[in-house]
Image (cartoon, rainbow, N blue to C red; front, side, top):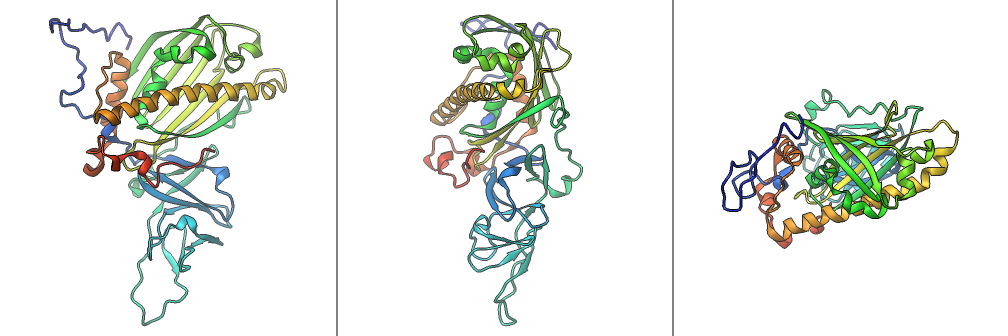
Length: 394
């Protein structure tokens, strides 16, 4: 559906004119920032390389603390991060074989969360609990995915498909960063390419033209034509777009898609047969209020014909993407702070593409529990106060 198809007339300042079909803030529509990520999907919660043999890693999904550990068999397990005995975090525990032993009283847990041993238990002691929650786990694309929702749905729920990952044509750069904002701000930021002024210091003057966009109940997709119209362009930007590698300066077609709950971006240079790079991203809420998310990104960059050229360009591309991400993070965290201060979403969006993606995120998400949804500006609701608010970037 093109922008022309979705053309709207805007009310005049005196209130005359046909109203927009999209709701304005304050008209009773649920505030998207109070909508939680639906748990019935596979979410990355750690880099595989961080979960080394016999090591326990603490992570989280939407306030649920999770302990990941890799047993001697090489399998990664995910358990609720608390001992059923005294509630001490199991992430402080010790891996023995394929079991996890609590550091306090040495209660041992199997990979499914069941208690396998209580060293001092006797017949005179009370009946122990069965264990703690175990999460379905899968490893793919260098990431550890858990299924935080209904475990009966895990087997029939597919992991995202990334054909470029592992392809001999592409080399992958992995990102893992904490961002202090609701995950929806991240979807909006990547999908709305009209914010290139923010990156003027690294990409120069870019003109994004929305060619078309379409949406359905679960997804929104947009196609842009990008033209460089002047200004100094960072060397890493040219290398990433394959201009420095191919020796050309062309217009690019960029396709961005939110397919709940993931997001992808493909950039195809003019007259190219395949994308110069493909990005896959997931924004995983960490705290119960879902005002902090962890971004996992896989940037799959096409290898040029010249052997070793991409390896030489790698540091420049990395620095460029890190700078762009830092600028985006600055903006979305500022949006979150404004929401915190106001206690509600008061922005007035006019871009129909973003209004569409908000509806997709709102309708596919789940309401936050009343105790967290009512947060607003209360200090106790500050994401910084959450014990599971963040973990080190990988």
